[in-house]
Structure formats: C-alpha cells, structure tokens
Length: 342
Ligand SMILES: C[S@@+](CC[C@H](N)C(=O)[O-])C[C@H]1O[C@@H](n2cnc3c(N)ncnc32)[C@H](O)[C@@H]1O
Image (cartoon, rainbow, N blue to C red; front, side, top):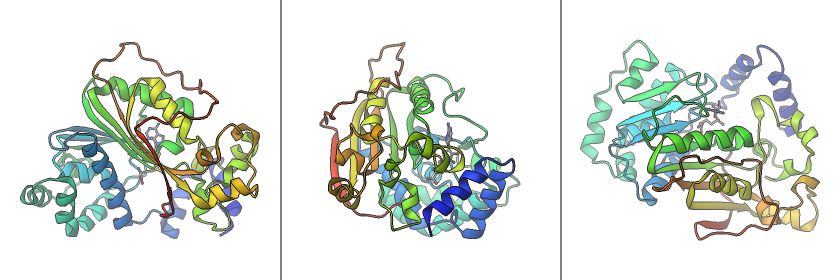
C-alpha cells in the first residue's frame, strides 16, 4: 500500500466529526485491530521481563497501564501473574467487552507459558484463570474479578490516584503517540503516583509507522518532512506520531527526576544506511542528531522514581540539549532487524 494514501485518509478522518467511529469500523474490516496473540503476548512479556530485570516482583503489586488500546493483554498478564490491582487508562474508547472476552479465551491455552515467563506458580495462575466468570453482564464486572479497572475516559496526565499508590507504571507502543508537553505532564503525574523506588516501564516505537504498510520507505522516512508538512501527514489526529528521537526521551525522563535503570535502543540498519549515504536527507530540525539516533526504531525504558526525591520536581520538558548524547551505563544500543510495527 502506498503510505501517503493511508496517511491522507487518516488525516481526513481526524478532521471530520464521525472520523473516530469510521476509523474503528475500518480497522474491524481491515482486521488491523485483530488479536495477534504471539506478538501481543511477547510485548506484554517484555514489560514483565523489564520489571523483573529491574528487581521488582510482580506478585502483590499495584500496576498502572497507560494507553489500554483494543486488547487488554498487558493487564491480563500482570493480573494473572499475581498483581494486587491493575488500573488501565485510555483517552479513547477502543476496548470493548467483546475484545476483552476474545482475548481472555485466547490466553486460556497459554497459561503455562505465562506462569513460566512471570514466575507465578502454575497452579495459582491456573486457579486465577478458572475462577473468572465470563458470563457477567458488563466489561467492568468481568475485569473486576481480576482486580482490573478500566478507566475511560481518562488521561494519564491527571489520574486522580492517591500519591505514592502505584508500584509499576507500564505502557506498550504508546509514548511515540503522545506530544512532548503532554508526555512531560504524564511523567510528572507518574512521579507523583509512584511509590519511592517504583518503576515506570515503557516499550515504544519511534519509527515511522507508515513503513509498516509500505516497504518502499525506511523506518526513518518521516524525518525528511518539516513540522508543517508532518502536521497534515501524521502529526495530528488519529495517526499522531511525535517523531521524538531517543535522546529526547532519555532527557525527558531524566529532567523529570527519574533515574534510567534500563534504556535499550534498537537501530534500524536500513535507515542508518539511507541516512549515511545521503539517500535520506532529514529536515533541518533533526540535523543535530547523529545518524544512529535518527535510525533508532525501538526503545525499552525502565525509569525508577528515586527513593530520595525532591518534593517539587518539575519536568522542563521542552528544554532539550542539542548536543551529542552522553550515553550512560543504563543505555545499550544495538542494530536490529526484527520487524515490529506500532
Ligand atoms: C497505539 S495505541 C497502543 C495501545 C495498546 N497499548 C497496544 O499496544 O495495543 C496508543 C494508545 O494510547 C492512548 N493514549 C494516548 N494518549 C493518552 C493519554 N494522555 N492518556 C491515556 N491514554 C492515552 C491512545 O488512545 C491509544 O489507545
């Protein structure tokens, strides 16, 4: 598919009153929001792995997911692994009871794997799964049995949660869709609601999502557009992508007062080659980034709320230094080619 055709369609839908509903219907018809169990379980496991790698257990934790989306795989995995509570928030009403039940039924065959990956005892996890009654009336009643609360409409900038009431904040393929100023406010709110030593764990996709429908362009293709051009093509509405580069994410977390425990950055070789050979010329607003930073197409971050923290932490989100990155120990950069769309 030519990516520009899709981008123009989404840009149009973003600007008409019933655009969101039409978008949802088109997704159903095209099957783009269908359950992809292997892929989605893998993504959920990356979040549980990162949390455990950073020294946090899953059992008995209070978890908060930002950006539920269509399929509640992440809340299900954390709940089955023994989380005390899982709250999941979204500004859009993508999750339905039908999607939740379909996803729940599908993971019935994967309980052993979920137990093995999360360290939960097999029998307990199986018991948790079997205890859930799927014939209940509403989505919220169904989720309540797992101590999951779906918050819609909700905005991760303003959760209304009690201060220091959350152990783990997680998100999958969300941060790239949130503008810098909004994201900065989300990290400030995250710091407020996290317990000292709590973790903010994110996996996200700074690549041009249009490259997943059109193999003729690279993962860094969108960097050639000016802000004005990008505002129409994918910088607003349903297809919004912030185009932030890896250094900006790192700075945002650190400016807010988080300590980066893990920061993994995957570089797309094809994009790197295109940038280094001059085949892809980026817009001047990106010219201060190194070719490797421009070619980062996936990131995994674990940011810890320090145990000792200043009470009035404020994130100067827009103040980002335009120098070469100083990569800390927590940052690892690798060349990857695994295809993973946003
Ligand atoms: C690409 S979807 C990813 C959904 C899901 N995590 C997944 O992996 O399928 C990004 C989600 O983030 C949500 N989102 C964007 N801004 C948000 C905010 N400020 N607070 C809560 N959710 C937000 C969007 O509505 C959308 O459902």
